[in-house]
Length: 187
Image (cartoon, rainbow, N blue to C red; front, side):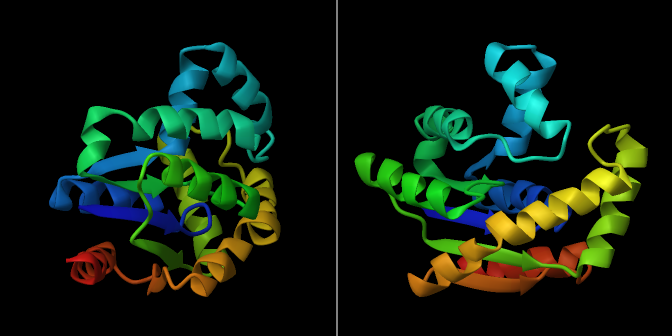
């Protein structure tokens, strides 16, 4: 059983890699971005609240995200292991996640940081926005998201390094090379 946290700036490849690695290891891929976008599309109360933040490029408040993650970790497919993609995003969430996991008798094996230079991230996200018609992938919003990431999320790298769980991976390598590296790390 593997329990992994994927860290990295928007566009670093967390979702792409989490999907492939989760399939390879037969564990749940838990993407807060996917959960939030589905809630927005379904126009649920939580989705409408989240959309206000997401459309500006801001992070969705912790209490909204924590509720979704807790529900998801308790689903049957997550019992064999999981990859958290896009959560935690700040130190408060990491502490809340530690508490939540302790309550359910789990802990992460590794926090994997996909490291990619900002200019590559901007280019990737602009391409993705054009291909998928995503309103939250304009250059202005992307650069704001990267600033928010650097201020609020990047300190998680130090957090997980201090507890001996951090593994950094060059996320700017070809997708297949990154995948191979990740699978070899967790096998």
